[in-house]
Image 1: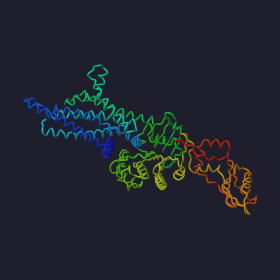
Image 2: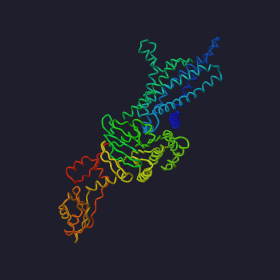
Image 3: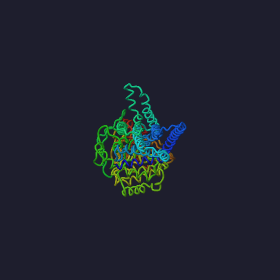
Image 4: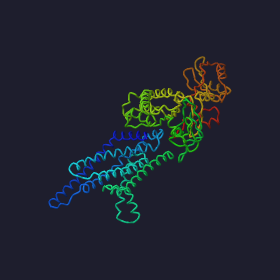
Length: 254
Length: 336
């Protein structure tokens, strides 16, 4: 346990010493801020329109601002997550520090969990930044906080799955760029898989099931769906398991 | 302290280490010598549990590298060929991190960190970023991380590679001072390093064990087949070097005579003997009886380098077998 925390602290240190953490958090905040501004603008425009028509159809901030916004944030995560994971193992392999970790009395699993946890903490910290937007909504509106909390839990679970996959892909190469591009490609595939889900062939349904975003829909609505949570947890487990196998196979191959 | 039994490591296409066996006693400092690509690094990686052996095995401090890797890792300090430094970390911070993953905590960690900072003379850069340190400092920080948990066994892969002569001497002194408390095994392809720092030497070439002995004994072994340097002067004026050479070649037991240098009426000859023949008395008598002055007669100093060349260059070994006494000076064929 203590080893996991030691590795995690070291990784967090590396994130914040290099520009990665700042670029990641900055980009994330700017892009999610832009989406927030767009959705709020649309919401206000609709509100004015309804008032001018004299209708009193109630507008719902949760449905019209928060729900589309968290969906956008989950897509931003998809695009930016490779930035966090690409260096995790590729850099250790390139600089030879993997030899230090592998010859120290720490288990592979402790190293993997430490690194993954550091990536999770960075991502969670970034989500806190985007939460500043909602402070605004809560100040001037009266949304329900529970669906928002569920949506953020969903964002964390989804990121956990993608970060675990990214961690695995980072063990495959000593080149950060390749690890990043691979992770980006996989994230992109996992996104577009649900685009054909209107069709009903069994293959397309399987692909749609694999799409990380279809499982986020219920979270975005504020529904805590066990089925989707299990999907993400299974993906996290699979990613970390593959990482462990990959590290072990490195020893037998190299 | 270290036992290696029939260790073999095969990669996809080549065999890096081929049935090597040796033992290293407690507190010894052993040189692991061989040309590039001989299998030094692979052997060390097996000892440090970085790579599993294909067959055979090794134990460190009584623990098997395959069965109890965590116990082995606790007792071993390893300096890989490339210093395993995180360029963005600061020296003291890095050493504290390594200490933690090696199992040190609290007061013990602080004590050991300060100790290795002093011991490896890196205290003055403890707040500097590792990526900005000079090669010599980086190497010493890497050495500091290897000894931070006070391991019983130290495995150092080319600890002086890439350092300047002053740094090399400092590093060697540091390593020598570590022996006694620690069992040290260090690899190198630089021979003087072994002569100066090690008691024992293990020579490997192309994955095979060539020799394992004390440095002194290896030198003696080579001296037996060595040659004699003779300086001869003419008594009145010029010396006919060719005549001296012809005379020396007639001495029984002499296989070859070369003229090393000629200066005025003095010439230096290198006289090679057939294996195990004492020739110095006969050579001296032959010169004096022929009416020349014998200025100097000494054994040509045989460095470990020549032993090494003889042992590792298979061409030279064959030539020596075919023509005893003939000495080949051939560069070691190295494959990177």
